[in-house]
Amino acid sequence: GDSVTQMEGPVTLSEEAFLTINCTYTATGYPSLFWYVQYPGEGLQLLLKATKADDKGSNKGFEATYRKETTSFHLEKGSVQVSDSAVYFCALSTTGGGNKLTFGTGTQLKVEL
Amino acid sequence: DAMVIQNPRYQVTQFGKPVTLSCSQTLNHNVMYWYQQKSSQAPKLLFHYYDKDFNNEADTPDNFQSRRPNTSFCFLDIRSPGLGDAAMYLCATSPMVGLSTDTQYFGPGTRLTVL
Image (cartoon, rainbow over all chains, first blue to last red; front, side, top):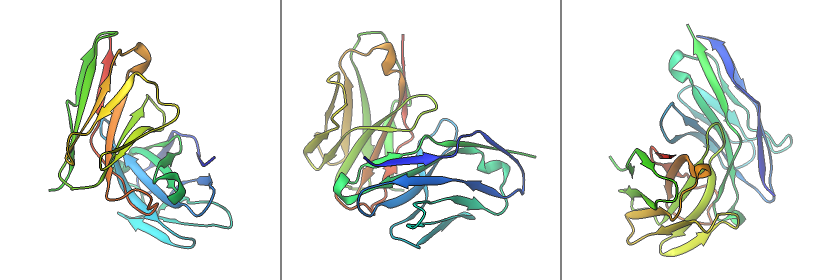
């Protein structure tokens, strides 16, 4: 079945450091890929998405590129801020799966001054 | 602003006492989803409605039921909550089902505590 594997957290960075959160996937067919962010005590918000190979999703300084050859969708940001502290979920959906989202286990990011 | 609203944000119930969680949306989306998210885990889909068509996930316990009286509202009923049902319950919507490119829009969640 479909699955998403994320690097385990927590990840602790200093402000202005470079961020990479790794995400790889296994899916039948051609999935769409998503990054969702969850701030403490809140629901999930879409951060970015990519719907086909080589697409790059970007938002708020974050970006991720859909790499079909390596089945990856790594999240990057050049300079993190304290306000980026949250849990980040990589997810996929497939048309044959009824648009069901399959999530990774999440990676907690903590940014310190 | 168009949004997904969940009430209450925090719900405390007793072991075995039925509880209902509410979700409403102003996005006019056809699809509504309920996810269960236990502490430090990924959200897990319980079921979804495409319009009035109910779709249960194979591993969703019978203890969980849902109602969608109209496009805007969807309810999650837990008939006899156990301690293991304590979790955050997330409601989400999307415009269509069957399109993997569609974004799901999440509400803020209801945190359920079972005493």
